[in-house]
Length: 299
Image 1 (cartoon, rainbow, N blue to C red):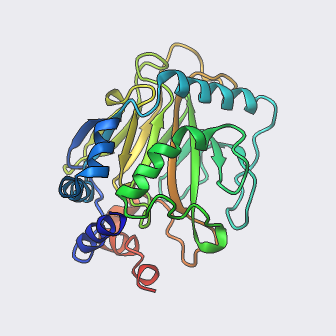
Image 2: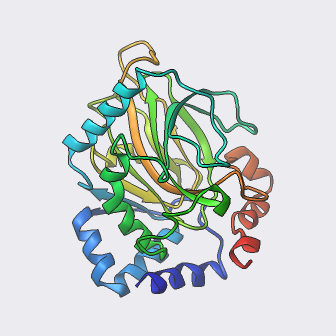
């Protein structure tokens, strides 16, 4: 099955670029989607092509709300015991860590303001982040044609690694501006929401750009414990979560999401960094071609 799925991805990409704008939204109960991927190859093939055409997938009830809230609380409590560090280059088997970005560090208009927690497979799973996501992540690996164990044993010298990133966007402060990310191995990012619009914050949250290049708000589709997967080549961002409190980086309030993805390590030659919407518009074809990684895939 995994080989068949990968053939669908690669056959499409022989004559097409990755998607950069969303087409539509599809919603499934997680268990229904799991059944399709495990038992219905024809429908799975159709969903792979839909993802490559730019569809965003909402998976309801990936984990319970109680488990999602518990992992958020555990991570927050652990962060109170240590100071946030600077970002650590992923060129060796680095420890899990917590960083804080106040913005202003990215070129070309792309910026992130958030707490970021990073977790790697080569370290002990002290927070239980891999435990909570592994079943669904395994399904994503199968869907992406990697096989259940694809990339799991990779270290930075292998150039592509698994990583879990938990992002906390504080109330009235956090955001990430519109950008596209290179993803050519596990082609879809997979996220689990640990908070919910209308409960943990008022407005704001995740959006993508549609084919008219307008912002399409997606946060209201996803509740605590629900999942979302999409090709991160699709332009996306996070609007500042709003609330009644003043911005306070030390409080737990805000938007939290756990993202399981495969990324380029710092050992990748000629890495493709994230690209802002403004930078992309200067030369779209160049970005589309660079994100195909043809020299790596064919090498």
